[in-house]
Image (cartoon, rainbow, N blue to C red; front, top):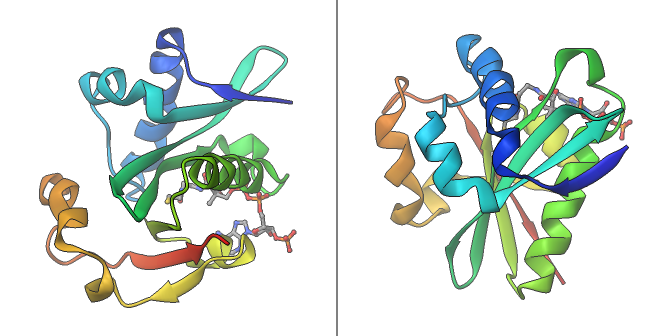
Length: 151
Ligand SMILES: CC(C)(COP(=O)(O)OP(=O)(O)OC[C@H]1O[C@@H](n2cnc3c(N)ncnc32)[C@H](O)[C@@H]1OP(=O)(O)O)[C@@H](O)C(=O)NCCC(=O)NCCS
């Protein structure tokens, strides 16, 4: 397994993976244009030269970053790759001296296993909701907010 920063040539595979879960309503769809713009935020997991997982760390403010677009290909779930990506983002956040990382998710149980805790969505700053306006579920979203403090 290799965890590495994403490259431009990964965009098609990332788009396919996210679109798969977005079609099941599990995550927000991402346009290719958005992926190109944000590609430097992405890391991926590669096995035998095949991209099997992706995710991104988006900086929101001086004290807050968000894990976004986290997805592990269906055949590779429950094998620790999601946690490995989350840990990569937490290390990245710590290196940037960001004190807190959050996620909005339909899988809070997974994030709790990764050390996050549930919080009230209202406790997150308004700036966080910028992207939500483009979501088909807005404003009746059932996602949970989870957060971790980095020491
Ligand atoms: C959620 C997701 C990223 C988890 O990745 P994964 O590689 O399967 O998770 P891991 O194998 O690293 O699991 C780490 C731990 O969390 C647990 N876990 C995994 N998915 C879980 C879930 N949906 N609910 C509760 N616990 C979960 C695992 O059992 C494991 O527990 P353990 O420490 O006791 O062994 C993956 O299932 C996925 O891509 N889902 C669809 C897209 C999605 O919902 N993304 C999240 C959007 S923010």
